[in-house]
Every structure is written in structure tokens, then in C-alpha cells.
Image (cartoon, rainbow, N blue to C red; front, side, top):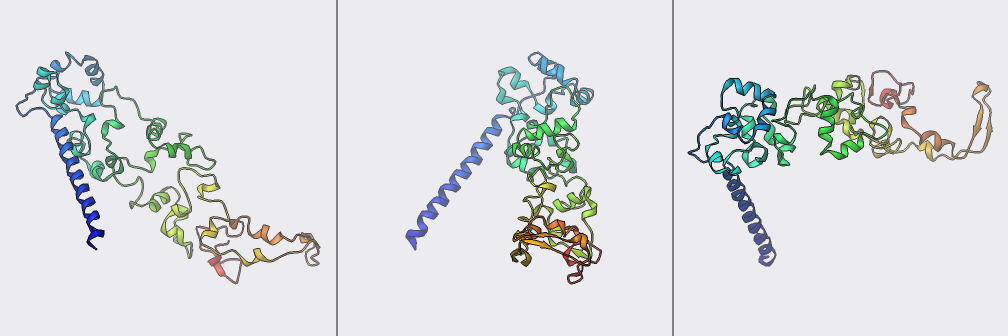
Length: 319
């Protein structure tokens, strides 16, 4: 037993040492990006001696307008006191919010942007991916209206799989500009837009309320998660279904026994309704039953009406 557990304990010890080394190195790098404790403010006019082009663009932004009215040290409101940086011209002696990592906590921007919209930033996937505000936002550039198209293009610079899915035959109208990624997602970690609960099901019902019910005859997946059957960004199958019918339905439901019934070749008559006479084939049952389940089960999300199929009542989710 000792021979089996000893290598595991050694690996565990090595991994813990590496983990703490990463923390130490990260904390050291963070301290290197901070101004010295004795640094003092020098004023934005001194900053513009070297960064005139950045200052001119920044003055046209919302940040520049507000900070210039509040203080003469608008640059140092975000970058910290700049005397040491000016004297030594060392980038490590000034705060650069664009280079802050997750160990910094993104505190520079969150000092002002501390509303509920950003309260869950630390728990988001963007933060876990070591992104910061400047990964998406350009602070010094002149303000440009973030139209739907620009937002979608910004998001799909990283989310290439979503961009590709938007070109599939069935998709939400992202590439057409009729929807924005922000209609469903909050990149800063707040609750999903329009949803009463932080769940995909509630979010979908925000735009598709007719699918919510409650119904007398319910379809269990609808009450659990829409993503069991649908893929929201785009699919090859119709209606954003993850698979075509009947393959999708057969993941949960057994095949109708009629599909195994062998037919016969030839014509048949119907004396009571001559217009319904026709020709049958050996594979007629298979073709009829294994084409699309929704040809018969039309109320797939749920129904309040009794079914025309008396034997199953409305449980068959037919109209």
C-alpha cells in the first residue's frame, strides 16, 4: 500500500509547490506594476508631454469628460500617482489596467463600476480566462455607438464556434443583425437578460412564452431544460434542434411498433371513402412512422386539448 500511495503523495506535494510558486510570482508581478509608496500626483498636463495623442483621444470620451471636470489629475485617477514613472520613465512604476490579471481583482475599473451589474464579475468565465475590461473596451479611444453588429463582431472574435454556428441553416438572427449577444448573455456576470431566474429555460421563455405553459399534458424535457433538444446558436436541423427527426425523439422514446410491420405491394380500395384508396408498399409503414414524429405529435411542447387519439388521450401531445 505504501508503494502505491507514495508516488501520489509526491505528485500532490509537487503540484502544491507549483501552485504556491504561481501565486508568489503573480503577486510579485502585480507589485511591480504599482507606483512606489512615496509617489505623488503630477497632474495630467505632465502626462500629456509624452502621451499627447492618447490624451487628445481620451478627452473626447465619456471618461475624459467626467474626470476633467472633477480633477486635474484625470490620468492618475486610473493609473495612480505618476511622479516615479515620470522621473524614471519605467512602465512598471505606473498602474496599467490593461495588464492587470485576475490576481489584481480588476479593482481599477471596479472602483467606480461597482453596481450590481458587476457584482459577480469574479465568478464569470471571462474572469477565469484572465480577461480584463480592456479586452473588450477601449478606454482611450473616442466613443463609438455599440450597435448590434459591432457587439456581435466583438464577441465572435473569441467565440468562433458561435460565429460558425450562426451560418448554419437554422440559427438565431445574429448575423442578420436582428439580435445581439447581449440579448441573452451578460458578459459582466449579471443575471440573464429578461429572465426571472438565472436559467436557460426562463431565458428562452422570455421570447417564446407560448412554449412555457403550464399545460395539462406536459412534455418533460420542456420543464427541465430547452437545451436538451435545442442548440441556440445554430444547427443543421430545423428549429434549432440538435438532431433531425426522428433521431432526436428516439433518444428517449421507443420506436412505434408499426415501423416493424411489413406491408404489401399493390393497390387497396376503401369502399367507404373511395378517395382514400391508394397503393401500399412493403416499407410503407416504416416510411410513414419514421419520417417526422411531429407530423402527428404536433403539440410537442405541451397541450391543453384532448387528443383525437382516444386511446392515449392528450398524453400523445397531438392536437
